[in-house]
Image (cartoon, rainbow, N blue to C red; front, top):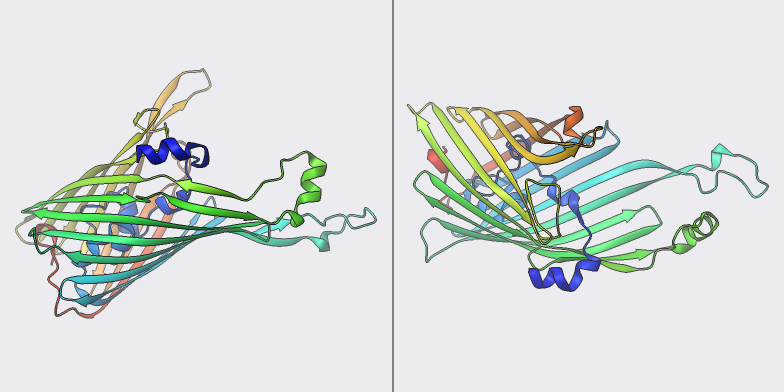
Length: 358
């Protein structure tokens, strides 16, 4: 990974494809993305593909919609998972993060210089992620699950530009008693986005205003490693408690995180979940530790708290999260709902559940 960083630093901007790091499912978001070790439903295709082996239904579906920045941008997710044999599962995850109905004012003035609002059209700036997941239970090590994602990225900015990207994620989960461990390598080989621009759509405007005309280029998303550990227990059968913590390690230089160097940054996270009979869930988490400058020239540290609840009714699970991907210092939170549906029992798989999950 250090070799990738040194060879392609000029083409690897910070936060490349960052829409793929937001997260899916209200459970994971409420627990501040602390999911690599404990994810056990269809959203595992995103959090850690190895967790797909914990899904007990034959067919599992997941849906989520979230609005960010006062409804300006929308984030949508769909997931599906099913077994293919007694030791393997496959999954599909679709993600769209977009700002729609952006005014296109290139032709606001007609050829005679008259202002004509009827000439205003609109376009979308949209990012798409397609994850094709495969998970398999290890024969050599008891309690070890392995998984991988083949990832396709498509990004578009109206008729002005678009990009295609391809990458690979790998993941593992290991259970030892009430302890569970998770490790994920995202964009492990680097994800390469090939950008193509259509200069005919903006050349005249850019030239008149002195803006740089962009060239077709390749943008590289460097690897991210996520390592989590979790411990869970049950109290008198009816109540359960789960604590999970870990770190996100990025390799695109110094970010505004708790630990940072010129080569990598470490962002810790912590999540908790309480349940009653595996029917009602209460969740919380903290992450996003950042150093903020104040108006006097000093600095102070902030963090992002998240909260959530969930309820499971037969084959339906409805989750809610109060979370934030914007400026947490202003308290701008987002309300997120997600739905998970399981159909049929998987007869051939033997799912593992932490601290006696169902």
